[in-house]
Amino acid sequence: EAFAVVREVGVRTLKMRHFDVQMIGGVILHEGKIAEMKTGEGKTLAATLPIYLNSLEGKGSHVVTVNDYLAKRDSQWMGTIYEFLGLTVGRIYHDMPEEERREAYNCDVTYGTNNEFGFDYLRDNMKFSSEQFVQRELNFAIVDEVDSILIDEARTPLIISGPAEESTLKYNEACKVIPKLRKEKDFQVDEKAKTAALNDEGIGTVEKILDIENLYDPQNIETLHCIQQALKAHALFKNEVDYVVNDGEVVIIDEFTGRMMPGRRYSDGLHQALEAKEGVKIENENQTLASITFQNYFRMYDKLSGMTGTADTEAEEFNSIYNLEVIVAPTNKEMVRDDCSDLIYRTEQEKFDALIEEIRGCNETGQPVLVGTISIEKSEQLSHHLKKYGIKHNVLNAKHHEKEAEIIAQAGHKKGVTIATNMAGRGTDIVLGEGVSELGGLH
Image (cartoon, rainbow, N blue to C red; front, side):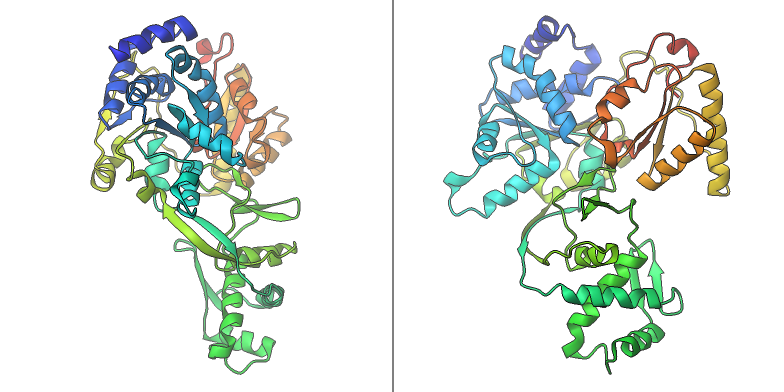
């Protein structure tokens, strides 16, 4: 009955009637399972069904999205359905006043990103009395792009830290030592494990430069720590890939979504080492006050469900870690998208050449193209090549996310070429322009 009511309200308010497959998706979500629904099947609308039903208890339901833009869009867009049904809708976002945050959590439906929910839980646990808490008990949550949040970022710790009393001068000194060391000769780098370590010759070189007898002497432990972090900052972390320098600050880039994460800092002196490397003001070191991983946070909900386009491949992990079953919902119409297999090239140059050739070919016929890249650096590289050929295009990466939604919405127009970093966390609808489907749709 609840689902039927929501379906009818969908028609009356948004002129959108839930398809039968969306009803199936809603049932899967209500049962506390993961619904795999293909891209473009309307996961956002399907989520309204179980959210309404589970909010009737009055304990609140959370919709977890991958970025603030989606939380804002969905809470306003789907909010019309909930408000018509007499439910209240709230949204939590970065830098929100405490009182408003509490009000948002007291609503029947609360939208927000995984980071916001997790950090609010940590902040609540640092308060002196339960009256000051902003969150209520964790009742029901639907996680959008569930594989990205519960598998890829599962062990990412959320950490709240406070300043520690430490001198920052030593990082500058350590930073001057590293350029004098040579890779392989003085230190080894393991890219996969993200580690860099001095070998015996390197230790000797550092001792000579710093004029100390034994780098591993207990009294030099702090110097050793700074040298190791400076080495890591120089050898493993790249500007425009792992972080960007913005307004004189080193800002971390989220490797999953390609977005900047202002306010987040690496711990253990690594951030200070990066600041020394980039020659910006070195802030004080932090100490951890509270921490939790997404994995542990989401397991505290009484009922958890999720939706994504790709979960079946990780079905085993979902089952063993979260006790969540993955069910594939059928598509509303036969799949018309052609999912081609991957092409592998010998060198990066050949790959770029082939890519540009393909983009030029599509551009000549007018077919729009969307290219996903893994880092800002790669997207700018590709953009540079396209400029050489005079192909008009838009670049989406962590630097321009204010205009992101508009650019993505335009990506389906004739002759459109859009380059975007890590599409994982975007989730914006691309509407095809006039006559594009005859050309073969978006490539």
